[in-house]
Length: 462
Image (tube, rainbow, N blue to C red; front, side, top):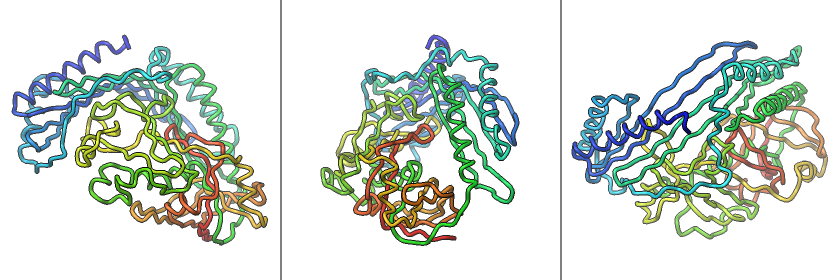
């Protein structure tokens, strides 16, 4: 933290000035979301190095309330004259904006530290460019060990940053963090076989062990691409399909979260209401938690975009609805209390959203699920990735299973050409859910999910 002592002071002084100027200009209350970031990034393109860059800067967003009217402006300047103009502009915007009784800026207490939430690593903050280049070279060499692979693009970025949330009601939160993020996008080709593009990204906040993790994650990515070179045909059918953790998150949980969003609930678009809490709405296998306290995930922290202390939030427990994702706006409209789910950054106003979704695994191993899903040995589809359309309101989805695999009697046979899958999210998470795997996987340092065996899915060969 000492390494960013000057930046913290400058950020806090600019935030205090913005609030002071806004209140002088006539704002009833004001809130500043600010950030400072320094990043070194090395990029890869077409099998080799492409660009190395370094940047740092500040971002400040000012939200003001004048009665029940809201104004918002942002800037990347710390100059007193610019900050005064930004404050005046925000108050002016509020004066011309329509009123809304649900706008609010609240006083919040500091969140206590959580065990294991280590966001700042002094060793990572001092990593040299040479070490960073070594990490990129290890990643590039590991990926290109097989000449059938094609590297489209990749990058490795090391950064250190500060997040600030202050308001005129006395809220004052600051967090510092370090991060190393690497990613690759590529494909495989062999003779007349060409796979689709695939990608991965990974995050670490600690310098210790990064080299080993880079090699391991790159190896896993390389092997998954090479596996796709073995191509065969799927069959068209309606029945059980295995959804990978990525597919569960992308197809099923994204739509589910739409209906748990407090703002969607407030405007009447959610399929559920507050009175549905404690009702059994999904399969008893579904237990879903949103947590902001996992340091190996992108979205983590002790306070949300409005300065409300974050908390683990149980959304479903054995199929029973437990909570919605509430920010101050939706909480006020619903006569509830925010549970720390305001999301966003300094360049935009807050809205409601999730942090890191964690779907609890089941009791059967993945291999047992694959066998159980194919009792007649006719083969079933395993959906790895998905490209298509999902209607979040109705839950209907239809799209292409990319990198799909064909399994017969619990054994991998080959990857299939692009195959159409369709179904309904709420059926998939309800009566059609046969089981969840005991193994779970964190996808791109974000959500965590098991694989899901789901019946009644329409599979059509293209």
